[in-house]
Each structure stands twice: as structure tokens, then as C-alpha cells.
Length: 183
Figure 1: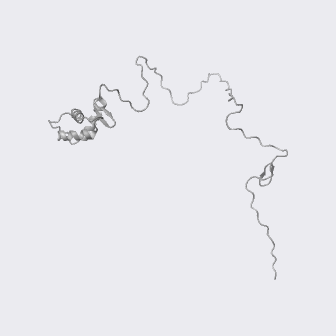
Figure 2: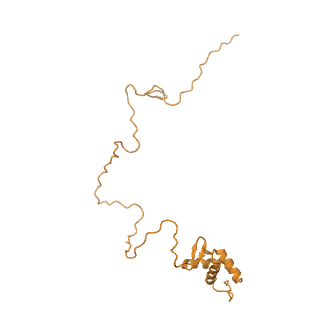
Figure 3: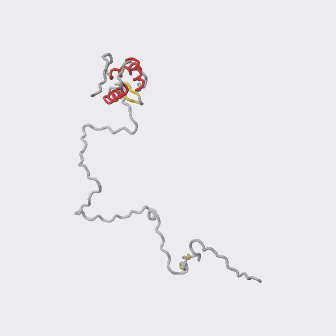
């Protein structure tokens, strides 16, 4: 059993009521959905039960077909003399209708496979930056081996060229003194 919306014979079609409401309200930037609805309720009175949904559907259809212009949450009639309103962002490049767009075949996903018959490519030559220094972080210097300033290894820690062991010094334990007990 389908529900039917009974239209009273005195009600004109929704698009006609919407256009009449926008003309009657005559607001500078157009009329919003609630003001259009209030005008329709006050003028026609006996509206169908799903009035708000019907109004929304007809407004969106009229907007898509170009009968209404939607700008800043308001609906208005399109002005044929007004320049088109620009949206946000960079405008698209003009398309030349005489120049056909090239059609390329769809590329497969992923990296293309190497050609096994291709000759090997020569090694790339590194270019200097002009300052004489190589780019990036400098390499670590090799540790010196032997000689006067060489580091020596002890059983627990490694001593550096200054003669001090690396890391935190060991905790010093106080020397134990013998206590003589007199009787």
C-alpha cells in the first residue's frame, strides 16, 4: 500500500510557488529556504504533510537545472547580465574545443619492469658543489693505532689520549680502619 500525497486543486506546482516566493520576498542576496517556506505557508496555507522535504527536493532540482542560483545559503533567480560567480581557488585553464585531447592507454600499477635487452647504463659522475667540500655529514675519522697519543685498554674501561677513563668514575669506598677494643 503506497502512500500518496494529496495535492489540493488550489495549489500550483512547487517550482512555480518557489519562484513566486523569491520574487515576492525580493531580498538583495536572494532568499533562504526558511524564508521561502514561511512565505509559502502564509500565502497558500494548506500545504502537504512532507512540505519541508518537498521544498528541499524542488530547490535542489531547480538549482541543478539552472532555474535558481545558490549563493551563500540563499536562492535567487539567475541574472542573465551578471558575470558568473567564481568559486574558491584557482580558476581552471580555458579548454580549446578545436584541439583534441590525446588519449593514452591506462598504465599498470607499480614500477615498470626493466628491459632485459637494454645496454647497461654508465655509472653516474658525481658533481662537485663548487666549494671543494663533499656534501652531507662528514665521515667519522679512523681511530689512531699505536704511538704516543694512543688509547690504552684497561680491564674495566678504555682510557683516552688524556689518560682518563671514559664514563662515570667508580664509586670510592672508604678505607676500613681497625677498631681496637679495650677491655
